[in-house]
Image (cartoon, rainbow, N blue to C red; front, side, top):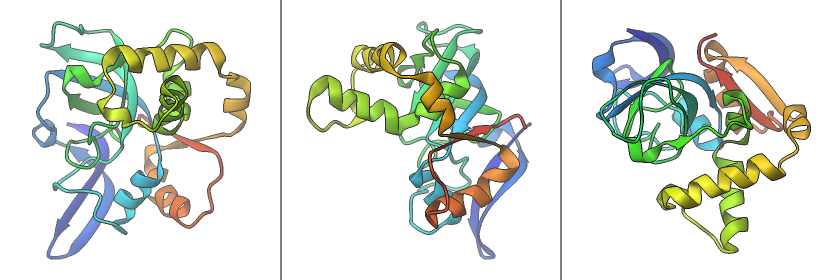
Length: 202
């Protein structure tokens, strides 16, 4: 069992709430990660409120990004203790995502957490910042999910080299998991400025 936001839909309607979640709810994958930080994006706001059909499988743990430490792995690329992050790949939509203390995913979706960033800082960058850097690298629009691992790693390396962390911290708001559902609604209502990072263990 672990704590996380679980989205359910049944005869009583669509609900998103913090709950104790059984490991059996987790999606299939060959790497299990102890999540430390996630973030809230517009798509997460849609998933948390149910205002658009973003979630395609129930029950679902939302959260399209996360950063943390590998707990177990049967994927040869990763071992327990590795620091990793994930952006996209359908997590939070068709595959249980990062707004929980635990995530299970396919190893090829993960990227090593650059030493220059804490897990919190990587989530402040999130999919939005990472995708913007991919566009700078390629000079054209890109599907960040389908970028090869080497390109994803290069994008994170450039962010580590070029991003002013002090400016990133200045626009980042930190919340606990219990605040994420309400913050998702505020995000959709245009009441949130900057980046929102979620401490999933708080």
